[in-house]
Image (cartoon, rainbow, N blue to C red; front, side, top):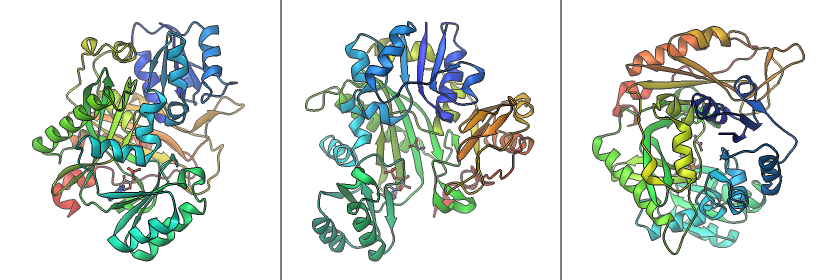
Length: 430
Ligand code: AMP
Ligand code: GLY
């Protein structure tokens, strides 16, 4: 089967790597891809991955039988709709389903309509009403730009002043059109945990729990990033919490298939949970695989990803058989100096082959390219995702950091405490 993956991050490298392991995978293309995908597939460029007609043109010219959509932007732009309309198998929800990520107001209404526990909220299309609500509920609270803002449109405000400033900057265009509508919500507390599920035909097939580390520096300090490390599964989650999260994902999946929503949801639904003292509550839904969660989830998948994606894309839940390795996975992100602020590119990366040769280690590329001398160089803020598997949490963590030590580039920046709180236990969050 010829397959096209859309996207260019560590998530897409992990998806491509997992698809490439399947004997069913023939030609594998990634648009636009990165330095890592270039080694296992054919990177292609020259068309806009957010333009359904352009993607369809490439699909027709290259006899592509399955398209896997990695990031949210093409989903929200309706690329899956255009391809499906033309009879192409697509892994990824339609534009309406992608609104679960594309609009926080839509997503919150979906949660309320389906009795999915979430933070109390108000949604506003004008500054005055939003500020009145902020003053009424008081700090701490959370201000969210309604639309897609590359993970930057959420401000957790500890004081009323910060909340007011956040509302004003949203309506003043800090997040572009994404901030024309603003969600203000109650501030929840507890450890965060994500649970991703393959969803098709109204059925959810949950993967393992994972926990991202969004802050830039050790001790959860510094600015929010696209994720500095992750591990899976999450040992502090109780059986009861896990069962509740699975029920929530199943309820959400069933709702996508029914009136009034009636999404054509065939892809991944990502549930971002907070484990509050009253039980797990949904902070957000995403309409795709998480990044970097995918980098610790797919290496634990024993089943053939091509089979799963074809079943999801064809709307055949009866064909899905998930099967996982009984191991732990830890991922440490290596970033460029200065990330998430400005950073330089083009630094030569050494030691990736040595790291990949270590037992249980796989290095996924997030922001890399080849220079004219055919060397790997840095080409983004997040550069590499160093993933290690182990038969205990500690072993996976130790291996990941050994591999981190083997890789070098100028300005290498990483957190030294990925998974530390989990090894301490629940008290680390109190
Ligand atoms: P979101 O993109 O909605 O997941 O928000 C990004 C991050 O903001 C989350 O991972 C949480 O750390 C934080 N956050 C979002 N909503 C809340 C909330 N209601 N209470 C506390 N923290 C939140
Ligand atoms: N890891 C967070 C996300 O993918 O949105």
